[in-house]
Length: 105
Image 1 (cartoon, rainbow, N blue to C red):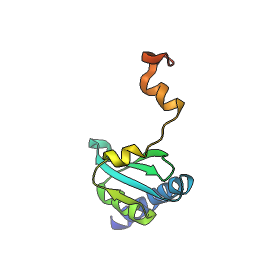
Image 2: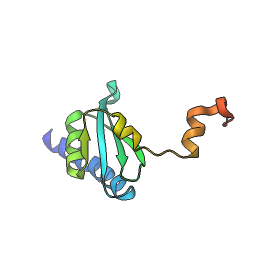
Image 3: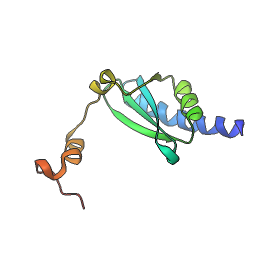
Image 4: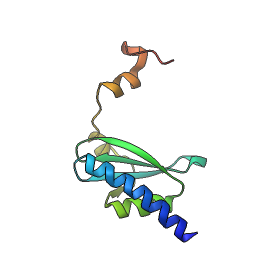
């Protein structure tokens, strides 16, 4: 079981590391329980790029973030959220029809 946890954490750390390299070389992360699906690992890169990944357990999420050298925050606080940069795609998806964006199917 421990070997399986280690392998899953290593795979997730590899994905997190790719995100970090693509977004300025450093990132902050936050782990949140989302029910049966597991734990969401939200990431914000140095350049404001953001994304998230799923982990089956908090232990795996914590191990992966540590292996990837990502600072873990207790919450997705205002300081972390302030660094997030969004583009036209996100704005049209968030607002949708309300501001003339494309209608959702």
